[in-house]
Image (cartoon, rainbow, N blue to C red; front, side):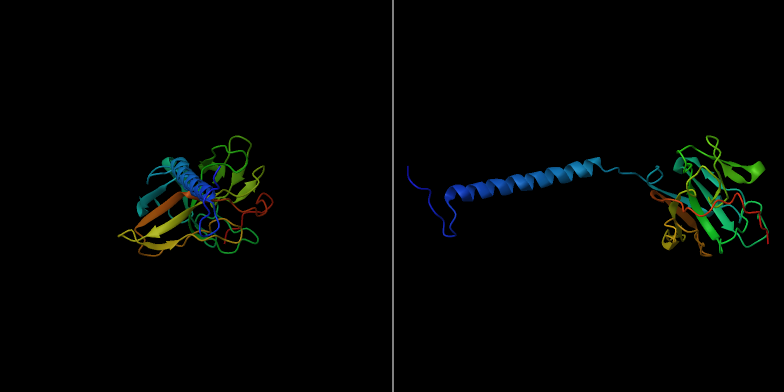
Length: 212
């Protein structure tokens, strides 16, 4: 049988064809993998949980007032200040707190076993009906068995043209901090696809309420 022709670079024709065939298979595999990932990745529209929600400032509670419930987005909006007397029965200064001031979007799922908790006006706190976890207005743990504070979503302040004025930042505990809203904030945008676990500061159960 005749020997396969040797190309100028030392490859036989058969080896050259194998390389071309292998490269073609690799390209097809990459294309298929890319299409599969694109198909499987969730794509959420605005106003759909997992996407963004843009709300007017009329939904923002007054400072230390009970939270605003937004079921479609599965979050509560809160507006807190732990250094004033107004509403301090809901948002009091605890030892080691530092100043907590601004707005936050809090995920409506208990950090213990995923139950849906509620705001209880009579007790001025969030309470989980499943196992008794309780949280302050800003989502900090008051009573166990919750292993950490309530989780938060990314919050953005927008002007009347929906340009971003400010956005929540990640604190030392790995969760989103409260956002001080600029005076010209016209809209709030909550990104429910961007959630950070709550911090794990000490429980507040042993701390007396401390109003200024």
